[in-house]
Length: 568
Ligand code: SRM
Ligand code: SF4
Image (cartoon, rainbow, N blue to C red; front, side):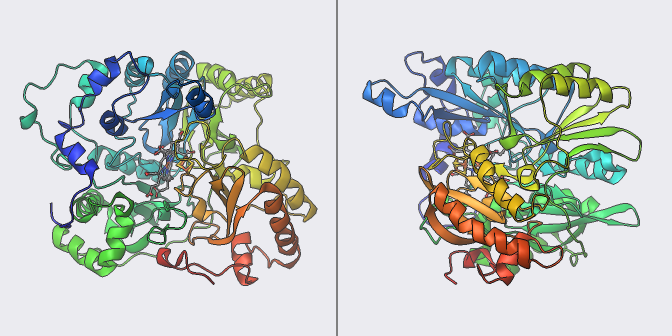
């Protein structure tokens, strides 16, 4: 590969010698003396869609008792555009009750995660997912991840067509190694590994994770500018004519390290539909060949672009394609996030948008989410759609089935969002964080309900209950809930302390800015109270909160990722 001359990172050597991601995973899984796998295998397992974790609630206590951490694994599925059938739902439900912590978790990339799978159950769980005709390959690791797509293909034939393109994009970047099938599905080993090839990725795959998303204006429900590669569908005279191409989005950064920053994708051109796959392939190939393979913190595509310049990139892309991209076509996003409650489409079918806080589907004392949705899956004739805001659509419900589903929702106390719900709650997103995430610095998923309970009265008092404000919470700066696109965002700094960011664009078109550092909950409320009061009184007609805080000079506008850390 071309690009860097610096020493390669250890991860590159590991990929190279891994025999196409096999490593010693089989031996690690068989080692009953520990709940963990060998360190190298833990890295390789990511490419297979699973992460080794430990229960952080128990970490100190087990350390004191000289026990090894309580290891378990998360499993992440690959599920393009977040679609699964009722049969698949039922099989996943069965698997999480048998092998995981009895919960399904909808992620911010429209797929499911299982948490709490012990090593001894890992193979059976992954095999079970494959039996459900789903898989986990390439859901994590230095590879193209789950392709996200606008969330309801039934809305129109064009929605369906755009979804089909996202599936093709996903298939284009699937790894070819048989290692996955040998390890998890007992496929006969390939006789001689040197003859196996990864035609696109090669032995070392990509320098870092890579993410693709497809949006269909006016909805930016997938945060297309947060994707390494975003496609914006362009429709003329009711016909899909092609896609604008956005490059270099990404959220991750490290507190206090200005060399790392979130960045929004730039729209660099337009391609007709028939060129889409060629464009995607060459964009990813440029990152494969020029991305930084020495310093992993600097290995994302956004840094390749900023280091070499967008003009260089456009030129390189045109050379590889044999043609330049056309000029971008006009488009306008006016909506982001999900709709709420029952929606009827043009064919008279119903779609129920359920709001699931942090995407966690489990039975609690208040709501029997897992049981209720299992019963619904048993009678549902349409399918399920997961959204990039961690919500669920029970899609394609017939008029006859609607009352049956309504009865099951009621029986299991599953709330249907209506006009009584605060718009803040409907749009809030949070990452997982404690107890499973090894990188969490503060609570996130477990903190969101409490935070909402304190923020909602402030909005009510200001007459803003129905005003959508994008709220994002994460337990660390890695950005898994895309916090730098929150009009209000809290990013964990240390237990109970958060950095407060304000001012992102309502439809994901502008990053936010650090406003206050390391606040406790009481400090967060104290800081937000006067801002929300002012917004209630001084906002212009239809002015989103993110725009207001910039107009009111509370924070400065961030135009480029590189300016993210600049002081005002
Ligand atoms: Fe993420 C790492 C969870 C979406 C940026 N992310 C992790 C790990 C695996 C922690 C780890 O490396 O040990 C987290 C597991 C927590 C757990 O216990 O489940 C984790 N990320 C998640 C999920 C489950 C959050 C959620 O609440 O839904 C999301 C799974 C998405 C999926 O289905 O594929 C998730 N992660 C994201 C997103 C949002 C997106 O893709 O739209 C981002 C920001 C966009 C981006 O990639 O720039 C994101 N995750 C990261 C990063 C920072 C990457 C960087 O460029 O610096 C890390 C850390 C890393 O890779 O080193 C990370
Ligand atoms: Fe973990 Fe940080 Fe991602 Fe939250 S943002 S899931 S704490 S890595």
